[in-house]
Image (cartoon, helix red, strand yellow):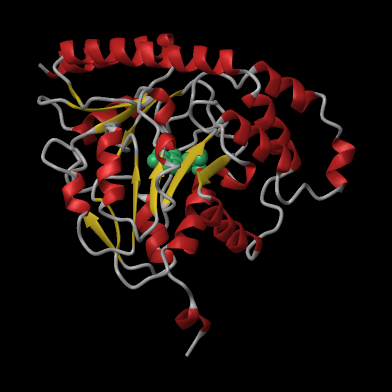
Length: 353
Ligand code: PMP
């Protein structure tokens, strides 16, 4: 017997590379290419560092109340965490404590499987349809909970709210988590369903549409009792998850709706025009309601294209996983960055033919 027999062994989630070189065109982790709202910069600049000697508000009241006002719910329906990864991890720990399997799509956010393994939650992956969609009928089977991103990642495809309703109707007795990390880029949020389903938990993040991946803010909205259960687990883990700067910065971000809408609009426009150009080059692009495109090309394997682009200083994401190992996920950057990507792809394809 050694300590090694007592270790909780996990295959960790592997995030996209974070290169330190400045010249890299970084389209591999779905970050927003634009800075956060100007008010975020101001509040961080003016922050009194002397305040850091004090613990932050354990309930992150300022941010929670601002979120409640923004999404027109009670503050008791809001939970905040250190990025939506933290919120999702806490939710897995809280809500998926049964013996029936947790269900999620086979092609989805690969962290779900890692948390399930880590927390010893039984799970079953439900295959997406041939055309990469979630079919609500596939979720009419015994389970201990359901989680899926909407829009899905890395496919980018959104599930209509009517289909979310079907999943909820067939699963009234388990918690259904809709991970809306990318919802602001063109999908319909499940928020209007909250009043009808007390088992629905919606998770969102400041990392994508609010350009704040570096500060780590995520949140969940759900029925008061769900949120209370989630908070009890969280307080049994770490009382002060949200630090003072992120509470202030998150609150400031929510104050500037105009900036938020402008930035999201720019990304949507860039996405749609990049998609047209990629299709002209022969790429097949899945329908994206996100800030990324999931693409494949008949003439060049994705793994090879990934390597060539990387060699030229353009980072995109490649997953060596079943069904998707001939696809690349390309985050939408600025129009200028995307022009460099498109020019580079044209050159690569020309050399190939
Ligand atoms: N959900 C999905 C579907 C994601 O792609 C990501 C980003 N990796 C997250 C959640 C977590 O994002 P964050 O922790 O930055 O909020």
